[in-house]
Length: 467
Image (cartoon, rainbow, N blue to C red; front, side, top):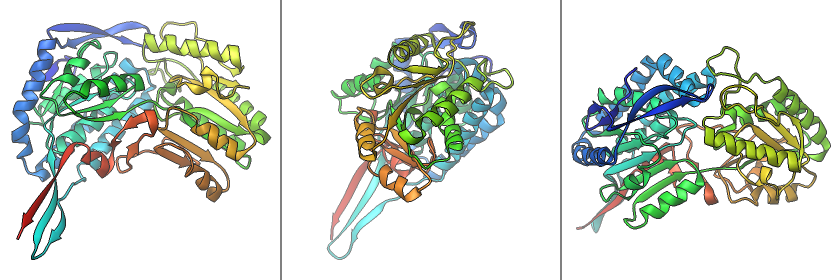
């Protein structure tokens, strides 16, 4: 797994170009990998187009078996894949090991899914059946926060539905995806899975290509809008899993210490670089000071460092551009609120931000209204439930949210009024391959995971026969 080549048409090939990949814990390159040229992007699409009809003809059970084989290969290479994840993404090694295990588990579950024909009518007058046909060539474009897991979120349902895929990882985290390509080469027929890399220059070419039928994208809302616009001319199918500004509403009857631990873990996972992380916490006035103190203590005690170092709990920001954005949010926190933990970039090599808790802020401020995507958590005081529901919903985003209370029924009633695709009670980021994932408003289009997500990679067709 040390020679990181492109996967095009069943062959591992050198890139016409090369690029260095930076370890965010050091700020220095640690490996050079293949980078695709525009010509190679076209070759990957052509290979997918050529391989897809034969793959669609493969029995469904055999396609399921190939996903199991990929899960087996990931399990067999789990140690190396986890280390690569930490080197290129920065997350602590235990989190990287968790991502590898989750990837394996998601693939195994995908292999159990099916989209059987549905018979609407079968009588003397006629026969009507609803079928699902492959779309053709799918382009998958993924973000840098979970480069292995999200790659297989695209590959799994795309190929199971009978499509071929061209996957493009983020330029700052291409290594694990290329390692995945080496595994796919030995499992799938030529052209079914193709993996190419770029320097953020091939996306428009891929998404506008006339031979591409669908785009599956995970990343920022701004990029998602550009993809949607670029796909409009050909009316390509799109699934967009975009940004979030997830609210956590904490009622006055919670166990403050235990709830603080849970919220901290769900806000600072992967250094806060999770679309579904807690991004703003609304705390009832009766427990506001106590919750602020508990969260500050947790942030101050957290061990920040290189993800390969034993004991590290929070790693670096993944790339230099995001590091600068997060520092801008620190400036906003200092200007508008009271920082009770962290609040600064750490004076060391790499892209490290001290885990930051900021209180005495409210809606209308940058630190609350915008997605930080870093290790910063703003705490907002409230005393009226109706008001806090309105404030939580007054956002362009609607990906996730949570309500915390000792009274589960009360919390569930509030959760049902939150305008987000996923709303949890007394938990957060509780996702799985069997649970549909969708976003309200500017947090996305379409569905991922479960049968609903698989259906997004197929074309519905009705066969209607008169008797």
